[in-house]
Length: 83
Length: 83
Image (cartoon, rainbow over all chains, first blue to last red; front, side, top):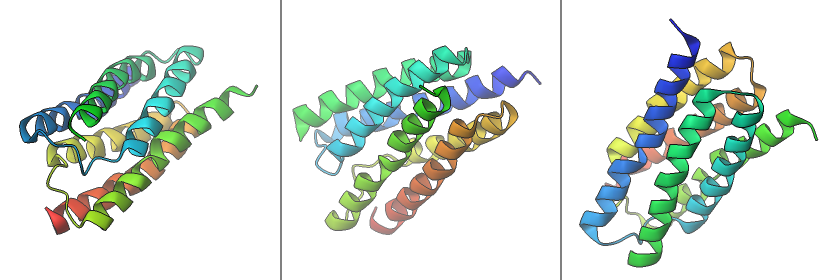
């Protein structure tokens, strides 16, 4: 099995995992229990992962972290909106 | 700058980010807003990342995902405990 496929599958799972969390907060119209430091550390870490992924030329790491950045950015907007 | 240091810094940030979220749920004694599918997809994804990291011999990816697995596992326990 192609190794990069496992990486891309891993990336798809960890990145798309943000979607049910985004929808849950949207439905509940509340993000009180979500930690803002959690979201900010995730965002900075994901941007560093992107840089790392580009540098080691890992398609899986780059792909996963572009999706994850979009997910975390959406969660931060929800956190600021619903608190 | 050593590339692996950037990866380890990225891994430290994304993995230790779970700590403020763990503490927030512990203090609020509630995890109603946390999505269980989010946590389960994260867990499976992280285990795949571990496998990927071992295979491409990336210390940063392995290190980050061992810590992340512990964090997500703790969050799943909290979710089951506090709902």
